[in-house]
Image (cartoon, rainbow, N blue to C red):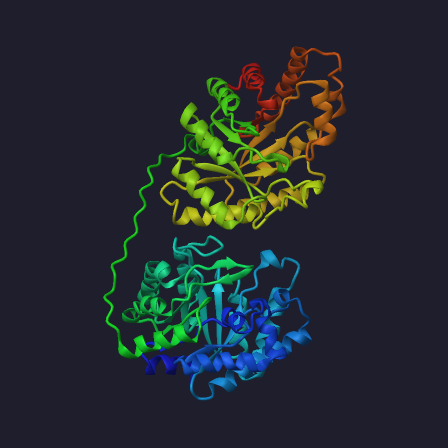
Length: 594
C-alpha cells in the first residue's frame, strides 16, 4: 500500500513510536547500538516492529535512522548489511498490515566537512531501492537544503517514490540549527512537488510543540496539498546513571497527541521515549474520534527597541570610532566603566567588549556590554565567540542581548584553549564564526525582524596568505556580516590587503592597538598570534623609558598609521592597552578623528 492510499483510506493513521529508546529499555544497551542490531540480533528489532503494529501502528519506520558510515563509523560493506537487513525486518514484520518507510537521517556538512556527503546518500538510497523501498522518510531534520540532493537522487532513480520530510522544531519555533519555521516553510513550498508529506518529530513533547506545530501545519495546508505528520517525544528527558530517561506517562502523551486529530494531520506517532503502550493508547483515541476543539494560536513580541546610531552612521558613510575594552577577570567592573566614560567623552561611537580572550575566563561580554550601556549610555558591541558555548547557549545569549537593547555583535570563532588546559577545560566549537553569522541572520528574519542585529566579523589583513583571508571574508559577507573589525594594522602590506578587502563592499574598521612600552612592544611582536609589527616600530622604544615616554611613542606610531588609513576605511577600531582609556583619548585628539 502506498502512502497516498494509506492516507486517503484513513483520516488519521497511527504511526509507530521510538526505536532507539525502546530498544535501550528492552536490552539495557545504548540506543547508539540500535542499528547494528539489525545484524547482531535481528529478532529484537523484528519484535519491536511487531509490537508497534500490534499496538495499532499502520505506518512504521525502518531501524536505519543513524545508518550511515559517519555516525556508525563503519565501512560500506557492513553498512550495506545494516541497511538491507533493516528494511527486510520492517517489511517482514509489516506484511500487509502496515506501510514501511525507509528511514534516513540528514548528514550535515559541519560535522563531515571532508566527506562526500552526496555519495554517501546515494549509497544508502541504492541499498534501500535494491530491497524494494518506495517510501522514504528523512526525519529529525534541522534544515531543508542538506537533504534536497538526496531527495533529487531518489526521484531520479525512482520517479514514483513517496518522500516525507520531518523536521525538529523547538517550542520557540526554530530548529536546532536556529533556522526559523518561516524560513523552512519558504523552502518546503518551493520544493513541494518533490514531496508527499511534511512533518514534525522529536525535540519536544506533544504539549510543548502543539502551538508551534499548528502554525507550521496551517501554512503548509494553505499553500500545498501535502500530507502532514507529527511524531513528538514523550516529553523532556533526564539523565539517570548516564542513561537518557523519559517520564513514563503514556496516558498523558496519548491525550496530548490526540489534540492534533481535528487538525487534519494524516499520521500521528511517537519519537524518543515512546513505546508500544503509548501507541496503543493513541490508536484508541484515533479510533474513537476524540473531539478536541482547535486552539487559536497567536504570537506577539513586545521588545522595545530603537535603531542603532552606530549602524545608521555606517549606512550613511559617516566615519565611526569603536574601542575595545577587556572585561574584568573578577566581579569589579569599576575600572572598565571608568574607561568607558572617558572613551564616550572622547567621541567614541561604540564600545566593544572581548569574550574571554586567549581562552582565559573573564566576565561575560554581553553582561559587561549591558552594564556599560545602562551605566554610561553608549552603544555597545559584545564579541560573541563559539569556543565556550553550544548553539543553545549562543541563542540564549542573543535573546538576552537583544532584550537589553544591544543592536550589534561581533561573531568570532574564538581563541583555542591552551594545550596545558585541555584536560580540564573543554572547548565546544559547536559553530564557527560563519555559522554563528548564519544563525544570527536566521534570527534576524523572524525573532529580531523589527530591528535586526548588525553582524560584525573579524579580519586579519596581516595574514600570511592574504588571498585565503580575503576568501574567508567573502564567506562571512555571504553569511550576513555587514562590517569587519580588523586585527591591529602596522605594516604597509596589511594596508594594501585592506584596500583589496574594500572592493568586497563591506564596511571596514581598521584595528589600531597603541604600544605603550618597550616590554609591551616586544611582547606583542613575539608572543601575540596574528599581530605583525615592523622592527623599526619596536626599535623606537627602549627599556629605560618612563611610562609617559613609552605611551607618547605608541601614540605617535598610532597616529602615523591612522593617517595612512583615513582615506579608504570606514572607521577605526581601537584595542585599548590594559584598558588605559586615556591613551586612546590622546590618539583620537592627536589624529583629529573628532
